[in-house]
Image (cartoon, rainbow, N blue to C red; front, side, top):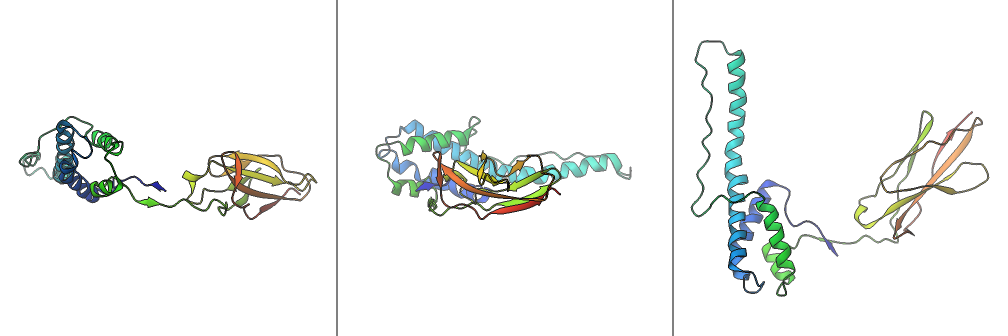
Length: 235
């Protein structure tokens, strides 16, 4: 099974992740063959990021709003008082937390990669450190099926399709068209970006064009053909 990214997207969850990571890293130093310097640097990076995104940023945002208000007063105030600009006083660093070089999160990700490549690494450790990610099941590729739409838009036909949430498991989408000219189904495109525009010239006589699609993996058709989508053009 593939695994999703282990680092949370929400700030509140990031703080929890960083706290857990730096608290639990030291006990695994010997098992994962990490040097004292690697562990110390990882802890320092995590603790500083906790301060930056959890304390410093939370204080800086309200100050930024007060700056906007002060600028407005400076420009359009009633003129009765002297303009006083707000001064930002950053919160003090917690005991034991020190500034680190830029790129702290990138260094933590590099350390995580080192941990996962260690001979002593097992999924139990990864789960405890929060670096395993959420399990993600591969879809049944025998049943994946595009959903197709077709809409006349001036002199073209807009074909709508998507990956149906399975983009990471599929390579492309094969589109076919039957223009009612006796040729039957023919290749329209092999598309890797959802949605397609059919710019073929429209016939003068009223004609029904039909479209269908199927996904590909490794240059082979995969899953089921879509239901047909059709438009009537010409005339």
